[in-house]
Structure formats: C-alpha cells, structure tokens
Image (cartoon, rainbow, N blue to C red):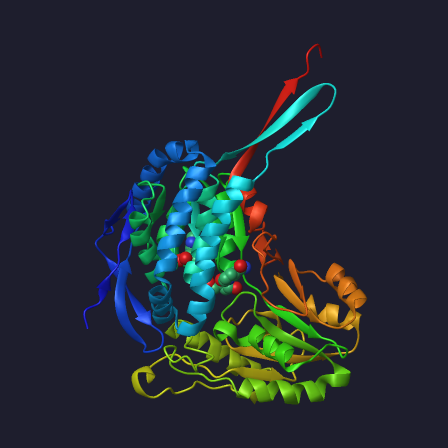
Amino acid sequence: MELRLLSNLIDGQLVAPASGATLDVYEPATGKAYARCPDSDARDVEAAVAAAVRAAPAWAALPAAGRARCLHRLADAVEARLDELAREESRDNGKPVALARSVDIPRAVANLRFFAEAITQWPGESHSDARAINITLRQPLGVVGCISPWNLPLYLFTWKIAPALAAGNAVVAKPSEITPFTAFRLSELAIEAGLPPGVLNIVHGLGPKVGHALTEHPKIKAVSFTGSTRTGAAIAAESAKQFKKVSLEMGGKNPAIVFADADLSDANLDTIVRSGFSNQGEICLCGSRLLVERSIYADFKRRYLEKVQALRVGDPNDDASDLGALVSQPHFDKVMACIARARDEGGTVLCGGDAVGVPGRCANGWFVAPTVIEGLPQDCATNREEIFGPVVTLIPFDSEDDAIAIADGTDYGLAASLWTRDLQRAQRMAARIDFGIVWVNCWMLRDLRTPFGGVKHSGMGREGGVDALRFFTEPKNICLASQGS
Ligand code: NAD
C-alpha cells in the first residue's frame, strides 16, 4: 500500500520538511503504517516563525469580527467534513469512529466557533476614581506556540489554536507525531477557508526536535502545552530561561468517589463506567481510581463489573465497538506492563487484564480488555502513577476524610468526580479536595466558558473561556489622569 505523504503548513503553503525525512504513521487497529509525516527540525520551525512574524501585525490589526469570520469559515470547513474527519481521526488514533463522530470532531468545530464568538464579546476593563480613569488593554503577544498530544488530536489542537488566533496572535503549532493526520487535514482546510498566509503554521515532527525548537525560539512569546507531566516539566524549564508565558495541561490520576447515598441508577452507573473506559481510558480526565464507600462496596462491585464486562472491544470502524485500539505499540506495551506491575503489587484482576485478539483486518492491532483491579494499597505505584489506558482500580473507603486522603494521595490534581445525593456533602468535599475540576453526579460535562485545568503535577494555568484569552494576551494599563489632578 502506498503511504499517504503529509506536509507542513508554512506561510499558507503545504511544504515538505527541510530534511526531506519522514516518520511512519500507524493505524493502531491494524498495527500497519499508512502514512508518513514530516520529520521536521529547527529549520522548519525557523521558517514557520518567520512567516508568523510577518503575518502577526496585520492579523492583530484586523477587527475582532474579522478574525471571528475566519475562524467560523474554518469551523464550517471542518463541519462539512465531519464524517470524513471522524474516520480519519479513528484510523490515526484507534478510537471508535462513533466516538470521533460524536465527540472529537464536533468539539473541534465547537472550539473554533466558541472562541470566534468569545472574542467579539470580550469586555474591556476600566477602573476609575476621582483622580484618573484606568483602561486596561489586552494586546496579543505576537507569535505563540501550541503543542498537543495524541489522545484527542483535533479536539485539543483546536482548543489551543482557536483562542490564540481569536486573541490576535499568529500561531506555530505542533501536533503529536503519533497522530498527525487531522492536523494535516486542518492545514488543507485552513487554506481552503482563506486564513491569511502565515497566521496559522503547522510543523510536524518529534517533540525533542520540533517541540524543543519551538519552545526555545526567542520570537515565540508563549507556549501552550498539553501532554505528559515529564514533557511539561521540560517545557517549563526551557521557557523559564526566557521568562516565557507557559500554560501546561498535564497528566492525571483522577478519582471517582461513590458514596453510599449516591443515585446509582443504570444511567449513572453507565457514566461511571464511561468515566473509566471512554477512549480506551486515554483521556486525561478519566477516573482511573474508583473509590467506593465500604457499606455498598460489594454490591457496587457486582453491578459495575457486569457493565464493564459487557463493553465490546473491537474494530473501531464497527459502531458496536465501545473500545478501539490503544494508540501505539509502545503505549500498548506500557499499559500491559502496568497491569503486570499491579499483579506484582498484590492486586487482584477482577476482569480484563489481557490483550484482546480482534480477528480479520485488526488481527495485529493493539487492543486491551477493560481491566478492573482491587486489593491494592492506596500508596502503591498503580494507584499513584498515570497509566492512561483501560485500567481502573477499585478502592473502598470509610468516611469523607478517608476518601479525601486517598483521592489526594497522588502528585496529580486534575479532575475528581463525586457521586452523592447529599449536596452539602458534595459542597464540603468539592471545597476540600485538591483538584482543579470537580464534577458532582456527572463526568466530562463541559461548558467551554469555565476554567479548565489541574493543580499539582497536573497543570499550571487554566484553559477555556476568558482564561485562555487572558493567557494569549498581555495586559497593558493606561492611566488617564483627571483634569487638574
Ligand atoms: P507527550 O508529553 O509525550 O507529548 C505531548 C506533545 O509534546 C507531543 O506533541 C510531543 O511531540 C511534544 N513533546 C515531546 N517532547 C517535547 C519536548 N522536549 N519539547 C517540546 N515538546 C515536546 O504526551 P502524550 O504521550 O502525547 O500525551 C499523553 C499525556 O497527555 C498524558 O499524560 C495525558 O494525561 C496528558 N493529557 C493531558 C490533558 C490535560 O488537559 N491535562 C489532556 C490530554 C492529555
């Protein structure tokens, strides 16, 4: 099979990398390479930054409504290809097409539209007293860098690009080298939508080459990153040398906490199951530690396992599949090693625990059964470290204090979900627990206006709504003295 050749987007043109080298891109469901993406380096980043520097002033000078129109045209182009892009996202990442069609691609459209509208509605700030009127301008930074991961490729790529562009910056963006396909398609659509050349540049390649070149480039004024905590730390260290603004969205080890008084209707239990296994557990928000009040533990476990065992792992093209393939061979190996480690730590595998063979075209794909483990101490590596796969541990608890101690017992602090009918308890717990996002009786219910992000090793800064627009702008305060003062 001829491999599809992807290119960079620089200055409004689709171009090959300076090196001419490429990286193989795999279809996780089949384990076969199907495309090649540019293995770019600092020369390509340099060209992209130069184009962005040229484009930035005119883009910033465009009235907000003009930038919003461009973003809406890009959103229209993505929306018109929703089905096609969903198939491409699924082929690239391994997730079920049905998930990409219902979540990933619609959310990419929503990201573009949300920030197109937000920028036209963003009120200015002014403060006055008898002596003066202070007006605070929010000026774009110039050229900014956006670096994104493989788990929600177009969804997270647009989540960064949209506010950066809306706020009047030119962008140099780097998608994950593991899932570059829909970012490449976005390049084509940006040209079709008539984005001015150089306003959006997309450079493909490896993190230590392209990502690093972008982070250390003196003309890149801010870096918005989503990915692992280890990479986030490297980006923070590099950016600090130039006092660059950084926004870091990183790993998680999220708890779902189920109290005895929770409404455990079938629908809610389905949401709890989904919170562990959606996208094969490869969502930073997935609840990978399921804390259950001891008085209902046995009954809950029985009902929960029934539902988990009913999940179907299979060809992502099949709408009956609940879980597709893990994203890559190395990630598959990592998840399998984590399951082996959980056994070594004394855990009991209640279901799953193995790779799944999917016959036919998917015989060599990277499929793992949804896995539930119990009997592990809260402070073991399995319960502290991110696995980022279809693996959930069950942990009993006895009181609110106990639940908080277990939930907070990791270095991470991204998202927690609480399941209880007692709203006073929910308020108490939500106020105390050390996480950036707390869902009560729901999971991954997103309002794009709200601040999104984590604490501790999960994040620095917030995305979403006004927080994203603030990140991508610099405030400048102008003090106008009142007459005679
Ligand atoms: P990763 O850190 O390996 O890669 C993320 C991006 O950073 C990729 O584009 C990669 O090429 C680039 N990169 C790697 N090294 C770099 C360097 N030295 N300098 C600059 N860029 C570099 O993460 P991943 O494996 O792609 O994604 C999975 C991780 O992302 C998980 O830890 C997950 O929790 C996290 N994540 C977090 C959120 C969130 O919102 N908090 C959302 C999704 C995923």
